[in-house]
Length: 406
Image (spheres, rainbow, N blue to C red):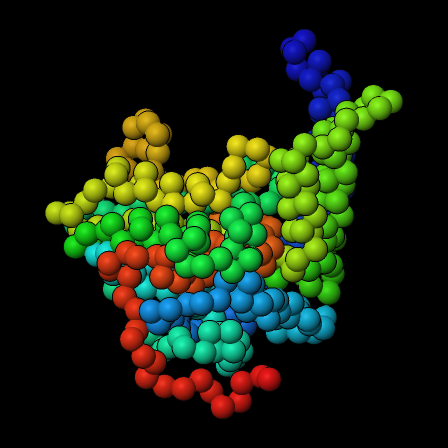
């Protein structure tokens, strides 16, 4: 009885009473918020479905003489913010366009793809032909459609990669490897060759998929469907640069000069802020038949295929984020959770979905990469990539479109 009296006199009890008394006010607001969220998911899903999709395979010639700067110009052209009105946002469900660049290995056979909405196909093709006239672009069937979740006969492992440090800190780019100076082919140090070699190491019955989803970063507000204002990332990053520079110099009356390595890092951070920014998510998948399965070995290779873009002197690093399996058996009774995650991650990969419903921010956190960083992790390598299973065309079957921009 005393406990009951104490409870009725407590602040918790009074709070519950107030909450129940005011439900005619807060309950409609909660229901309206839930309805509004589901409405936006619904109209956006319809808008995305109406756009359709097309997968383009990029076939490379024997010689690619241009450095990754040409690819950076291509990404700059894909900086599409998808400006919309209130009616387009809330009634038609218009969202920012996004793209997917993909590196895949099918039994060691390496292929490059670009996924886009059909309305941007001409932009993608003309910009690529403008920078690389000798390549060949063809529409390809979606290689993911024939892969279904079958943990017994077709085991798989997938992950969403993450950034270790704050997004103000850049990756080590082609600029840091000296590729911006157009060195002779025999002197090139192309960080992407490590990824190409790993993809080429796949054997019969194995598949390796690497998917890089990206969309233009812009200030988001009510017109874009965001009630909470999302500012540009540059303000936070410039503050981070200032804070780090002051820390490196010291707070004494006579601050020390920065070392050469510290100057390079600060210069790279400032260079990143000055380039066009994209929101990015990188996915990796290993899929194999039961007979060909080398999952432990290939997972290690997949995780190491991005290590060359980091450095122990302050640069950012791409590392494995959340993945499809669990560390301990008691975390996943009878494999139920893993099966669910594998199905969803595979479906998210097939739909190229991450920035919007149905897999918005699924098992990961988007991060900012500049055009320079994107051009480093995905560009068209020259002869320096000598992997035997990396097929190249001897001559191009067709000519670039006649309406290329001049």
